[in-house]
Amino acid sequence: MAERSAKKLERLLRVRTLQLGLVRADEARAAEKVASETALRDRITQLAAEVAPAPSPAPAAALSLIAGAQYRDRLHQSAFAAERRVTVAQDSLGQARDASREARRDQNAVEKLIDRAEVHAALKALRALETLPPSAPRKRHDPC
Image 1: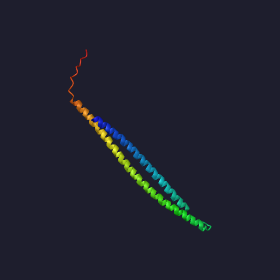
Image 2: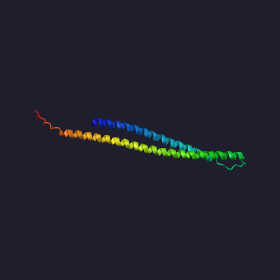
Image 3: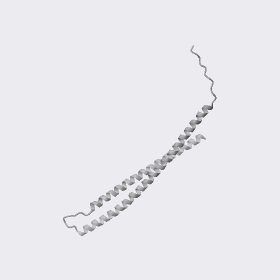
Image 4: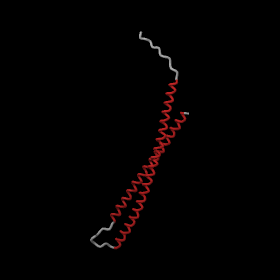
């Protein structure tokens, strides 16, 4: 029975370890997504700052001002969408971290069960040794 239980715990540990690896990979992907979305948001913000109207010595054509305004408007819409994507990516990263923590907790629980089973088996073996009948004293010969 103990052998069966030990095999079951070992199998559970393997499964939990695999699950932990998968969850950690998901967490890494989520962190990478947050980084890429943040970089995109920063790049859009930088482009919007570069397109901002600047005073020029020569009067600018109205068409140029309208085109710049339309481009800035599109950049601001893109910046708003990028901000939403960053927020969603951060939320998914938080969920991935929670899942990783939970998977680690599950794996630790199985490891503790295995340790407890090993201690129990060792104590059982010690008790079995204690219940053995005492052996006959050895006969020692004096040196000749």
